[in-house]
Amino acid sequence: MSDTAKLIYNGKELELPVIEGSEGEKAIDIGQLRAKLGLITLDPGYGNTGACKSNITFIDGDKGILRHRGIPIEQLAEKSRFVEVAWLLIFGRLPKRDELDRFSARLTANSPIHEDFRHHFDGFPVNAPPMAIQSAMISTLACFHQEFLQLDSHEAFEEVAARLLSKVRTIAAYSYRRSIGRPVIYPDPQLKYVTNFLHMMFSMPYKQYIVEPEVEQALNRILVLHADHEQNCSTSTVRTVGSSRANLFASAAAGVSALWGPLHGGANVEVLEQLESIHKGGLTAQQAIDMAKDKSKNFRLMGFGHRIYKNFDPRAKILKESAESVLNKLGVHDPLLDIAMGLEQIALKDSYFVERKLYPNVDFYSGIIMRAIGIPVNMFTVMFSIGRMPGWIAQWKEQHDDKDGRIVRPRQIYTGPTLTDYTPMDKR
Image (tube, rainbow, N blue to C red):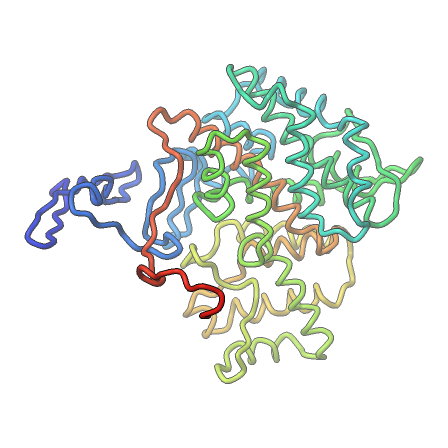
């Protein structure tokens, strides 16, 4: 098979190298297209454009495959924990025991935030959107940790990665506590990553929140399953900002802002909002399914199907088990969760959904689990940002380590007015 593609334009011929990835995916290298032929490509949304080479995450949406550093997500969800997966993504391999212990110790040591930093929360309205607070406070970390704005060693990078991973959950918990008028709960150095987060969210003075093993496992899986997902909108944003050599805090804050969009990180919020709408409308799960199948109703069922996965979302398969475990353990009686489980049971057997491969996706199950645990809907996307942080850090590092890396600067096709003379005020 030829390792080049040929493009002919206005009698000029250009051979373009064909690049092949380790999993057989091919791409045409158009790096010389403008210089040789005076052309650029137009690809709105970059759906057919590769912006980088990466060895972090591989996805095959048609086959329902997701792997981190080559390891299937199913194995990581079953055998690993969030902190270990974070190390794997950031440093390129599974950690040895001493490395994992050292990194975990760094996370524990960095879980508190500076007392002066804590006063910055007072500047936000009590009802401020949690994602706005999350983005602003991650940027503010740069003011309190200026020694890490320029990284000159592996040790410094490992330390700043641990600080960001650890403090992002503390920021999230503090913003939630303030929004409901409860005192902040300091992190407990005796608790692990996920359990400590739930402690800061739900404990009260002199009354510690007891985390059920099923709840801890489910939330740990949610974070693992969201840890990285190739070049999505927020990850591309982190790389774009990082390409200017912006520091890690600024780049991650930009990722939070991109994730805030309802077409990206807000999907599981839309699932719960739709369940609320179905409940208030007095509809049954079957009636909602029938409306989704009726083209005249203009009703789309949220949480079913996925833009990338044209098969069953592998993350959804894992969370389905966790959702059942959490609901059974907590014995939650919630009409919205009853509707959700009814939708799932009907859709998985309905030929309309099966033939179109409209299976419940990761947002469907993550929303169900977090509602059952007691995490409010406006914190769902914040939870996503905590889970995605290792991927953002890994992608930022990969880009900064690339000796041939360039600042991101897309071209455009201009469609505005041609040369136009200025019109004086009295003649307009």
